[in-house]
Image (cartoon, rainbow, N blue to C red):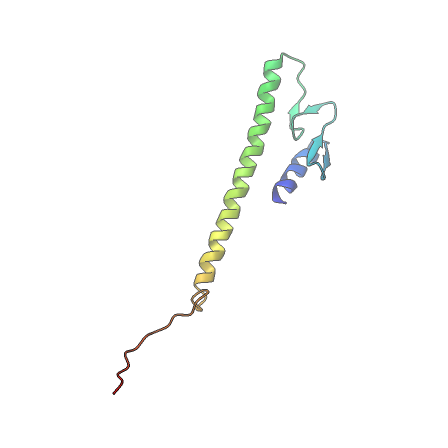
Length: 101
């Protein structure tokens, strides 16, 4: 859901149309790339390929940031759960020696 939000936002910033079902971005004639972040270049094919790879790199960076934030939130939640005084899932039991006569 978070990735969908960022992708839709990036698509719509440059007048793209976000399709939430297919999770694709349709660009106007002035933009190109997966999220309409690249300007259409009328030069050689090599420059367009590098522009497309830059937009792919952008998507990968956003995905990695999202994964790091999600992992951080999970670790923080797990640490907080262990410090709540209940000892987590199992209660701590103290054993004492009992002598039977």
